[in-house]
Amino acid sequence: VKAGDKSFSFGIKGADCWKLLGVFFETKPVKKILGHQYRREMTNNFIDQEKVYLPVEADGDKAFCEWSKNIGRPAVLPVREIMLEPERIIPLKTAWVIYIERELICPEDRDIKICFGQNVPMTVWLNGEELLFDEGESEWQPETSWIDAKLKAGKNRLRIRLDRMGADVDFSCQIRDSIQLMEGHNWVGCYDYNVDLAETNPFNLLKA
Image 1 (cartoon, rainbow, N blue to C red):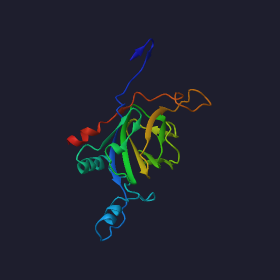
Image 2: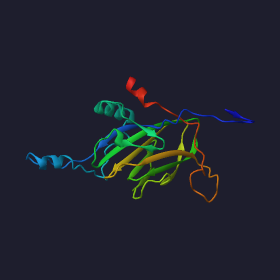
Image 3: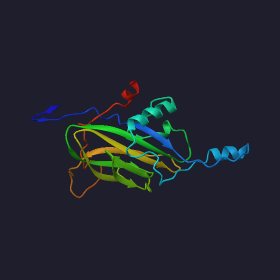
Image 4: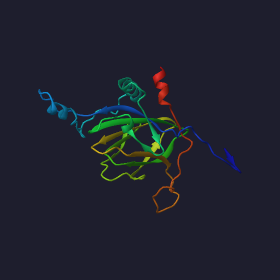
């Protein structure tokens, strides 16, 4: 796109479709009695925040395809407006851990800032490197956490772990430029969005 003497490139990112790599939780032993006690134990799941449910080296595409088969539909979590809403396809009302992943395509090596909003414990990996753990002790805000990161030319895998403790998960993610436009300020509008990124289509993985 040209505007006067300036040119701008636009990618095909924007759908923000996250691949669901798995839903994990712990269960209490079921007592060998029938009736009310049996039902209560089955709905009292919990999670172990110290446990690695999905190793960082695990193949995300393979996990996505397996979970798509498990739930009988594409395990894709689309972002509506700005918020990810995992409860749309995860009906469990108790505690659980999910791993989600996106594959971003960048035209060149680039320094970026990733802006997260979340209300639950979160761990972030980019291309296998852990960048952030946040305990998620506050209510959702669009800029709960900022981290500096580097995208490489070509494909980049952004993987997130979210720990649902009780309330519904509120989560958002924005890829922004690393250049601060207004020195001394740190709110929405002070960083440019990376509009020239592209994103792989997770639905194509299910056609193989």
